[in-house]
Image (tube, rainbow, N blue to C red; front, side, top):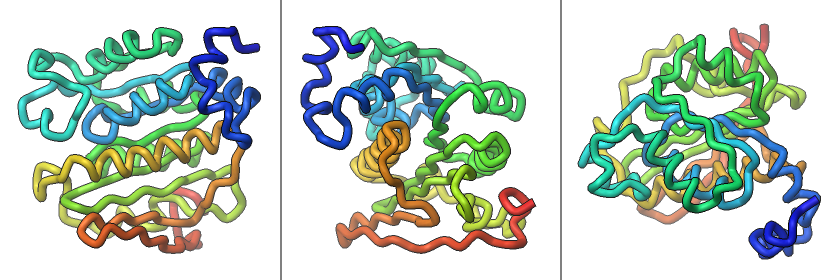
Length: 248
């Protein structure tokens, strides 16, 4: 049951009929693993923490540098040199102290992923590392934990939801087979316009809230944003019979 203070704090969110008090209680009881505290992870922590998630596990071994400040909007000049996950923990303690924040100030590896993924309700990929994304996809499919993938470069961004609990749900490997070596494309190689990251992170956060509160989610779909034309497109993804991850 929500306290009087919680009812006041989340009142505007609970006014949405499809969420209500029961949805808010589901959010408070949920735990989410967020991997990557950069351009996507910054707004992700703010959105989900403000929404009243029960627990957030923040994973990132990277420290803040000046090149981050253009797009990682919760960091300040005084934060340069500090760990990203620890800095966002401090931000959330000031913004919503009721949220339980666990910091993992290391880069995600197989051991960490195997430990944390079975403990959470949703995993959110906010990294710009393709190998980490494949690792998350493989283990989330294996442990049947929903994964929300996001990426952005330049004026463009995309995201998709992987949920092996759903019948015939395609995974990230179905869309981008790891056997097909693609050139590395990320913020360091082609750059990024900051607001695109908030757009993609907002969509990832919205899908997270919908998953946790039991609202319908569109699977087998890649949502792609073109910031130059200001348009969204949806591409249907088919579950691949040859996929070594979700069709074993």
